[in-house]
Length: 229
Image (cartoon, rainbow, N blue to C red; front, side, top):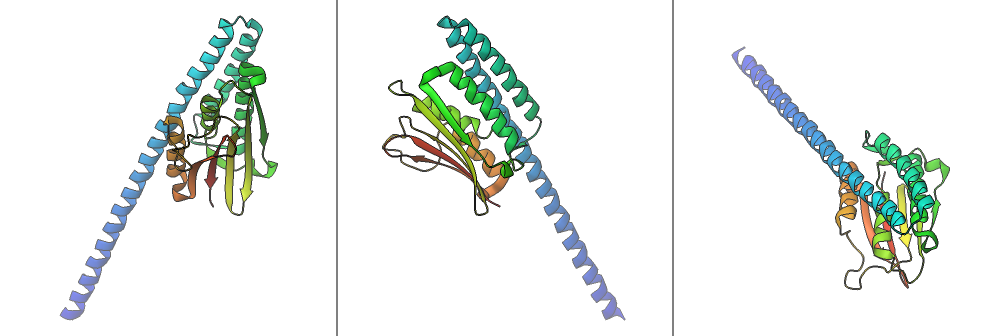
């Protein structure tokens, strides 16, 4: 009887130890999720002020050259974009359809600002519209194309493509601009905006979410977001 009691007590202590370890692991997992969400919110919050500053600079440039009507149109576009950004800013993720609608308005503002020096094309199958992506995940890629691709010697064209590749969602932003410096080559993104995008993808999807930057031939740059699963 004593031996049976000792064995039962030992088994109970093992179960208690396993339960305590499981609870500790669960608390750590919850803490990691909370920290990841806080980090995502901080990263997403960095995009809005940066985007707003660029939009105001676009309006200021139109005012400086006396383009009053275009400046008023730009103000309307910026107001529309801010409403969309603030509405989506409450959520860490949005549908692809919402992201594409935001990009359409943003690209129209770019057309208004640069006129014949800028054009774009966008394509996405309707069946992918319900997929969830981090909010404002594509706009920094377009902004990067404009900032580093436009040189004034020729019009800049930006092509935005969304498609399914086997079990992966692929979002590409390709331009025909100046391209990546020869000493850089393809690889991990550099610069505040692109690093922000890569980090949000990592936090949301782990190794299944990634961003790569590639040079194009004879000129231009391709930014590719890949989300697995």
